[in-house]
Length: 265
Length: 285
Image (cartoon, rainbow over all chains, first blue to last red):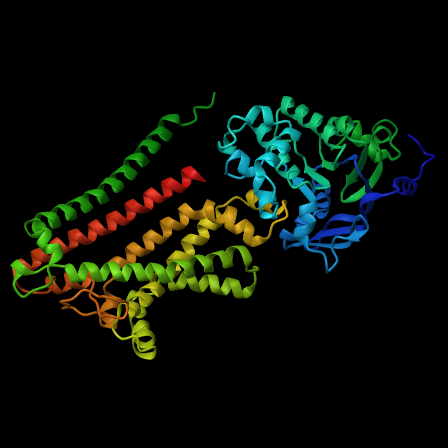
């Protein structure tokens, strides 16, 4: 184990010149039970950042704080700040609807709307007043999500008839159609088979050219394969945050090492 | 090896199945007997003349035109008043209201209201709509009273339908940067529509058969005209049936039976429409 790096230094080491997202001393409680404890970390633009940790460590809660999805959980309350390009996402003047428009999300279980494939993609832009040709945007988004070739002949069929992996790529296309700057992914492959999983991982690598991706996963191989940076959470505490290579091969913390080598969790 | 009591468990399973089947078929049989009896008795009187004539002292000339039209007027206006209010209340309670003491108090009271005897609504309608708002014995007064009566049922069933829409759909929609109204309008309501429709039709079917509140607010028992506007006096099928059934002559009892057949037919038609709408919305959404 490396003893020459202290944990505080590890946190401080991960500062970026122009972070797109910054969490500052974020604590999130469900009623009185803290799920995320005093977490500070910044997310680099156009990179994939993975948040890993055992079940119930607060990684999903932290992720949902980035686009204010915790607003829908009345018991959840947050202290600290989350900055998006330097602006406080939780200030009084911030409209959460606007936040979610810019920071999209893909959920753990594929959740397409029970509508047609094309409507799934076009609904977000149309409701947000996008005036352009909607079929063009549908095609573009589906192409980006690597789904176009499979569905181009049945755009008006119900999305619920697609396979699980296709549904999840449709959900990614739906998020992309809003042209967000950040895409949050909450264990996007946990309900999928290995083939679909690897397709989505390839897709993420393509997408990072234009988007910033934050992915929560309990699959460590996945984090190691796709991410540039990895944050390890345990019990709501940020234990370690660093470049993925370093976190997996030369972790600074003993707990991290035990987790990534599969000794617990 | 564990014997598992398999024999005995299968026996219990079979017995339960027989029990369920017996109960189901027994109630259907009772209904069938009732229908057969009523149709048999009223069959002779059922013709076009019966539908297009006004009530009369002479059974041969008596018909249900005013009662049938009155019922249609009544039910249309009841739907007009109760559906928007009931669905809006359900949306508010499910999607907007915070889980506070007040909203729980409202919830409990709506459930209680569903159990209040209909005659009480009749008294309320008489005092408020007929007297206080001076609407008189009109279609509007009757419809408003009926609306009060069925609102709890509509609200409760609409809430159930809205609650059954998966939260993941709402989350997906919110994550695209949309307002609550947009989510409700585009996803929650379409998904809940079949359930809401079923509740509305069931509630209206209840209203169509209600007699007590109409008697209370003074719907007339002898009307020789068809209401031409919402402020006209009216009668309704159940009242006409009640009127005929309480006369001593056998012929009028048969007329009542015939009117019951018409009332049941109207109800069946409404239920059929509900099934069709349900089917359509489930396919296209």
